[in-house]
Length: 114
Length: 108
Image (cartoon, rainbow over all chains, first blue to last red):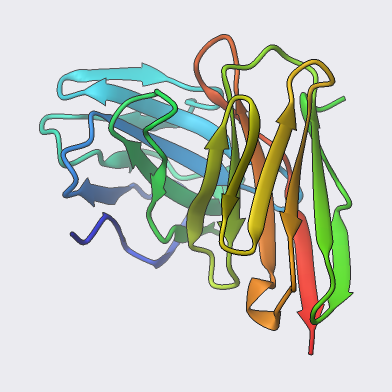
């Protein structure tokens, strides 16, 4: 299993540009999450999904959109990039939210908006 | 005040030392996670627990639900243990609340 795969690893965007961060997992996990990690702060939940066709907002959803058309894929879309979206983004998945279901993280995407 | 507080924020140890990282939380939880983030950024789940103690190799995690406190211990520390250790709790909304992490450096 490849686990959780995120692409790209790095990206620089100009203000107002758009991009999609890709996330795919091959573990047949129902739950998928997008987090952002800013210096000195804990990871913050942007969006999550409990299964194909179902998405919901997390703590910091503004400026982002997601879709979950398949179990494997959970892309994160930035429509009009802003400097406040400079961050490291992590995708994660788990089979369920139970104690027997650990989180699996991707390696992260470092995004800079200038 | 953050709902999840970790201490210390930074820790430097000599190889072989016994290390303790603490996590206190202020909300009701169903589970607590310990995660490890290596330089280069990848995050790995170490433990998930709701009571008592778990052990994996040189790592031990304990939780005291009444005191809302958890500890992560590393025995016989090694430079390859150098990483950021993150505590996260699953609260009433079933979402994870993360601490800001403890940066551990183990020197040879």
